[in-house]
Image (tube, rainbow, N blue to C red):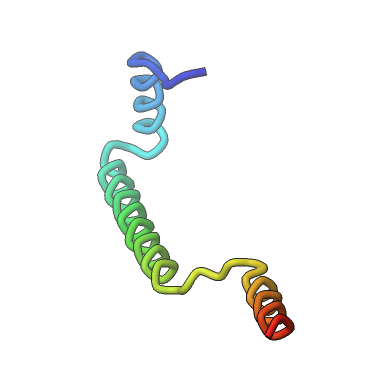
Length: 75
């Protein structure tokens, strides 16, 4: 099942016009565009916060403590 072709898109557009009316479609598109813009802005903020946080590696504390124990027992 792929992307709808030209005929299918025309049918979908016709149904949308019937349901919402020609006057409401620009308002709906404007609201949809604002929603996408807000979503992209929030995703950028999430990526910036994630980039600022140091990455924690699981088990790194265990490895560090094991290496410290080895060096102190060998000395």
